[in-house]
Amino acid sequence: MTLRCGVPRPKRFEDATTDAAVIDGVSWAPEKLRGGGVRLTTPLRPVYIEVTLPKKVVGDSGDMSALIDLAAAVRKTVPSLDPDDQGPNDPRA
Image (cartoon, rainbow, N blue to C red; front, side, top):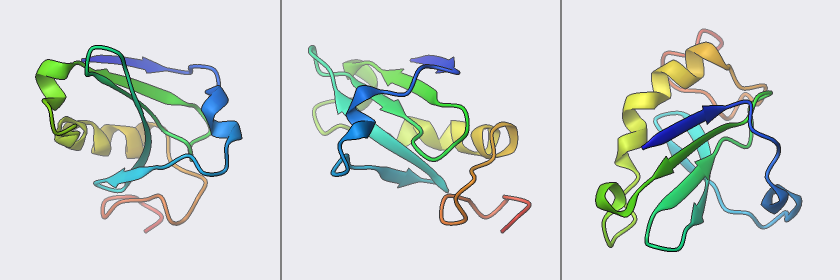
């Protein structure tokens, strides 16, 4: 797993139909990679956070539950500006 903070805004965010999954109060926009991995970027935060999960983590089903362990740190470190993108421990919730 690779985590990068402050990445440039992904070009795929220009497409209004880009899907997002909410995992423990954090929205992530997934992008399937060659080789079976998944790259996920937070769309609703003032600083984009990107996580790359290799196929050995996501498996054939695209399991993104590894992000649960990161959710609290993301919410605390880079709070969302969107009130719908906050978890149970978000100080604004």
